[in-house]
Length: 136
Image (cartoon, rainbow, N blue to C red; front, side, top):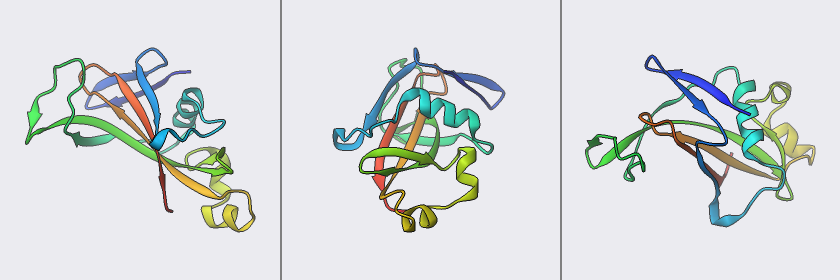
């Protein structure tokens, strides 16, 4: 599975090969959540738009310019919901359009929420994905 997007007149391709990793907060993996599922969600999402974010760490390509002691990356995030640490749904897939966190939570279908952060180097296109527990 691949995901292609354009930013500032440059095309980027997110694949299995240029992914540095899928990182879970405190190594608490979510059953059923995978790189392919995340790339598929990005393809399904209608309003996926990466934006500039700045981090203190420099990409391994070593081509980024330092800006106020930080480095520019392209970032997009969305949310996923789980039940007993198992993936249930994400907020950019088509199925989610007809529901909400509160509806799913009140129906007992989900019990936790996470933010999925996709961060790509604007120079070389290498990217990583972080998954962190959050409150909705």
